[in-house]
Every structure is written in C-alpha cells, then in structure tokens.
Amino acid sequence: MATKVVCWNIAKRREPWRELVAMDADVALLQEAGQVPEDVADRVDTGDEDHWDAHAWNSDWYSGRWKNLSDRWSKVVKLSDRVEVEWFKQVGQISEVAEDEVAVSGIGTIAAARVTPHGGPPFIVVSMYARWIKPHPSTNSKWRVGYSDGSAHRIISDLSAFIGDTDPGTHRILAAGDLNMFYGATHDNPLSLTDRERTVFERMDALGLEFLGPQSPDGRQANPTPQGLPEGTKNVPTYYTTTRSPETAENQLDYAFASRGFHKEVTVEAMNSPEEWGSSDHCRLLIEVGQKD
Image (cartoon, rainbow, N blue to C red; front, side, top):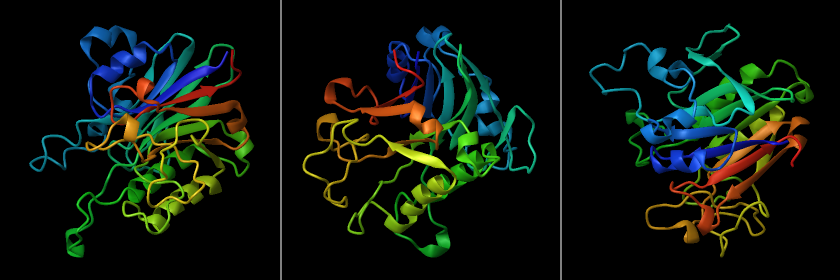
C-alpha cells in the first residue's frame, strides 16, 4: 500500500486542516501553518513544538524588534496510524547533532521527520518553505518583497545533513514545499531572478535529489502559456494571487524532490483543478510513496 503524503502551503488558514483530515492521507508537509483548529486537534499529530518552532533555538535576540520570530511555520503532521513519525528537533547551526536533531539555519523554512510505513522501509521527509528575504538597506533596492533563493539555499544546506554518501541510492529522502520560484523561467519573466533561481534546482540535482515536478500531465496547465516560461513548458500552476482564482492560476511555486533511485517509488501530482484546489491560495501536491493499491 502506498503512503500518501500531502504537501500544502496553507497560508495560516484554518479550513485546510479540516480538508486534510478528510483526505485519508498519512502525512502532511505543511508550509505557513498556524495553530490547529480545536475541532480537528484530536485527528492530527504535529509532534513536539521544537520540531517546527524556531523560538526554541533562536534565543531572544529579536526581543524589542518583533513580538515573535514568525506566526506561521513549516510542519510535518501525522494524519494516520498507518505510519510512525519521528520528528527531528530543531537546533542551531552546530556541526554535530544528536540522532533526534536537525541543524537549521533559516526561520520557519524547514521541518523534518523520519516516516516509517507499517510493513515498509523508513524515509526522511522535509517540508520546505523558501520565505522571502528583503535586500540589505545598503542596496537601496526597490524589490518590495525580496528574494527567495537565499532561503532555498539555506534549506538545501540543512537537508544536506541527511546525505552521508556520494551514492544517491543510499538515501531515502523526500523534500517538498513552496520554493517561491519558477522552474525553467526565461529571462523575460518579470517575477523571476532567473539565473539565481536556476542554481537552486541545479544544486538539488548535484546532491542526487531528483526533480519530480509535478509537471504536466500530472496537473492542469495554464492556457495560454504565461509570460516568462518557454513554449513547451510542463509547469502546472500551484498558486494564485489575489487578482486571480484557481481557474485562472498561472504560477507554479511548489515542487517535490526525492533521492535518485528512491524517486522511482514516488509519484506526485498537483491537485489544481478548480473543483479540487482547496481553501488556500496554493493547491495541494498529492505524493504517493511505494506501491499503489
């Protein structure tokens, strides 16, 4: 039986939690997750707080600047009893961690756990959120939002700790989430730092993490092809802005990767048709690991 994993940026909304528990999935990799609504709290397990809340390891240097470091986090959530989940506790950027720890360099960017399906071998899951970083004030930059590739590279550095051999076939890693960037963007894409973003996908490949998309036909494509993507792109929209809707969504920001070799056991599709989109501005990625029913 395949293990069903849902990857979803839920934008700190409450309704997605209810939709998750109705999916009969096993694990969720969430981004921008807030508190669990009380009416479904007994049906999900988010593990110990120190697997996702960077307040625990970031001391109090932010005191007087912000009320808290963040109000939304990457989380790994257990949704069924068909799997066991061992969450990795976040610690700062130390060079040697304990068996139950992961060194983390970005606030709210990562959550990691070991998932063991009943009757199957374990694999590592990583929920990724490449949050925007504003340029330094000295740049006098007009970028209002900033850039996401800096967060993405920090995520890659953190998950690299689970890669202890040059042979990708020795790893069983599934990493998925919202990278806030465009796969295969061309230089006329006004929303992309094209060359910088390309290095993220290249670095994943260099680590033996196979790009799984989702790509068409595993999701509905935008029509016509959006500006800044090549003709023949297989990108599938996973996000819409406030001026759009699921029907008119154009941009793919959410992706999945798996260790080369292990990736042959993994399928991923974008649940991006209007009727199945869900209650967030991002659609769900449905990932299945292992043999399907």
